[in-house]
Length: 399
Image (cartoon, rainbow, N blue to C red; front, side, top):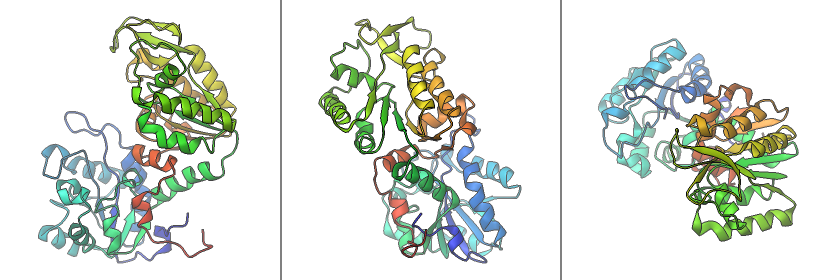
């Protein structure tokens, strides 16, 4: 990676502002239901503690829309992080202001504090320069370890780096190196799997991947736009009508480039979008007019799995069906199992795909499960991530 990392700077005795991504799911009682993002930041935090830094952690949580929201405070996160670190983590009442400044001034080397939700201030998402300067004034060094927020040019991810030196944490480095290597120099065959609901969300990814992959497998709701573009009647299945011409053009481009472009040939169709709906497995040319496809069918699942098992590199973003309902989870489960048993490099691009891997107990069988859904999508599109671009560069020739 051509960006400076936490290993390239002296942290001893310094106040270090670490932007982490602790935007974790919680139940109705604010119990954390998946702490993977918190655990993923621990190596960077422990590294700084061991070197005698004063560690100031900052994150967003939820969508509080620029004002205080008692359901989005960082308290449960501080408790979980304390347990993971085996040491107290003081949660501060805000992320800027006199109380925060006083608490930071009182820190000793090795102390850890967690600022309150940065999105309680509307200036955060606006990347307000004065707000970024106030955050920067708390520290001597900025470490960005929040890959999941790196695609956002916010005050705590991008703006702060204009005022104090910025470097990457270990998680950020890992995310960029693994996915960057997959795109730049993949072991072949290179297979990409895209799912999820809308074609419009994946246009940039499809365009970029068609120049790089050997095979592109399409499932999920977005598959029906491509099937419709081929002339199939897909009943009440999800179709992005405005993208039918794009779908035809993308398939033609794949053919020109010699990319294997695979669509479902059978689906699990249901009468209603409900877990207990009547359902049946049908060919893609036999979906009843008033039914909808909610998962890839078993024949397609076996065909996709065979392609995956023969791949040198697999990148997956988006489920094959409505995996949250058991009746429509088989396609996504089959794909995850094929990746887990593959001998190749397997990368799961965060979001729903990562959640599915967790649900099926297969996350630890993958080469890498990204902590960032939106960020990994934009990375796969080939876009520059603002939170990465803002960090300091290594000297030319240094990797």
